[in-house]
Amino acid sequence: MSDDLPFKAEYAKSGRASCKACKAAISKESLRLAKMVQSSHFDGKMPMWFHVACFFKKNAISSQGDVGGFDGLRWDDQQMLKQRIAGGGGAVGGSVAAATGKMAERVSARADLQVEYAKSGRATCRGCFSNIPKDEVRIAKMEEPDPDESYAYGQLIPRWHHVDCFMDKREELDVSEDVSADMLTGFKTMKKADQEMLVGKLGGGEKKPAAAAKAVKGKKRKADDEVDGGVPLKKAKSPDEEKEEKALKDQSSAVWKIRDKLQQFVSNNGLKELLEENIQDVPSGESRLLDRASDMLAFGAMERCSTCKTGQFVLRGDVYACTGNLTEWTKCQETTVDPKRFKPTIPATVKDVEYLKTFKSKTKKRLFPKLTAIATSDSLASAPSLSTRPTDLPLQDLKFSIIGRLKGKASMEKRIEELGGKVTSKISDDLFCIVSTPGEVGKMSARMKSAEAENVPVVDESFVEDAASGAVELKINSHKLATWGLKKHLTKSGGLVKSVGKRSTSDDVSDGAAKKMKISVKGGAAVDPASGMESTLSLSHS
Image (cartoon, rainbow, N blue to C red; front, side, top):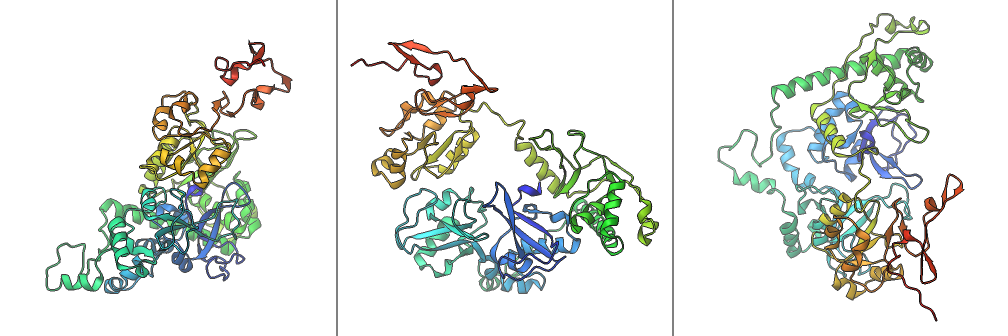
């Protein structure tokens, strides 16, 4: 769904928003693009809006599937964005020769990736969390700050890495394999030896246009999809793709024709009456009113959600999503590409509107791009919902941290998450344990000292796979690398107990009444069986 995508596209609902790059106002009804960033005020994402031209100076989009609301744009704007995305964000239009001449300039324009020599030895690598020595080559991915960091809203900050750590975290940082060294901002300022090192690790770009043109001069073109200079032409579409594209274009034109007519001839009150007459929820704002009304007139009025019985389906990106609630605390997660519809009726109060006098109501299935629909269904199938997510994984809801340059660190983080755990960089007393190496324990870095201060156990790399078979709390001692760290135990509710006698609140009280507790008596002392230390504790008499 579009809510989970990293970018968003829409037409400005008013003229109040300003571009985060040039600070100028974004005029009403003009196309604007947003990068979705973590809000510092609530647990969710919020848009950082840009003019289209300003957006591509600071951001790079891998595919149109990453842009929420893309299919709801006018057809011409969809095609313009497709060309921008395919061309790396540069200006569209012009001849192939002109594109060839500017290719190197466009390819290197990755403002979200930077390379430079470390200005001091104070910066910490976001991969291994050790310091990056002064004058060492470092690479950064520009990201939004965490909610607890003190930065201005919308400001992007560099997350620096050693070159090797950057390569290990490449997939996690969402840096695709086609990103080469010469795309990094600052690459041309590096020394020749360091440029060669970066090219060796990240790969080099295509040949320079002039050199490539010279290489093929006087030779017959090898393939129909290439021109002089090695610039690929647009791949020919199959008949099915052409048919689908034509159908989508016709659909987009029809929907926008209805929307434009409604905006021209029908007032906001008339739109509300039109929706209410057909038992549709009435949203706030002119733009949303027009979207809902045009969808209803183009495809038919939608019936209520059959799962929660009261929710209204609303178009969100490539699906219709229910806006209702299953319970007082749980939102309905139902989605569909083909909601049940019925023919809308035109209320008498707006029948005098010239456009609606001759309008013929009908029901029709909305078309979605085939590739987008497949990607959506695959992602929904692979990502478990709240109701189907396993709750009996061995590392369920346990927090881990990793200290040091471990081999295969990215795959280890992925494995921990597969087993139900969470990986965080912050060292705190709510960590279950820390994965590291004997060498890191011996060095006693600042993060390792924090682990000792918080009394968090440190285990070796083999602990993760050993823990996959369960009974993780019993396996910490056999993998411990440090002398500190209390044995942590899982309660039935998934909480952590760090000391004898400390119990979760769910065990203390149930439904407002005191709960009976079974205890064991050993050596004249009472031991709580839930602590797991019934057979290991002993009482010392002085």
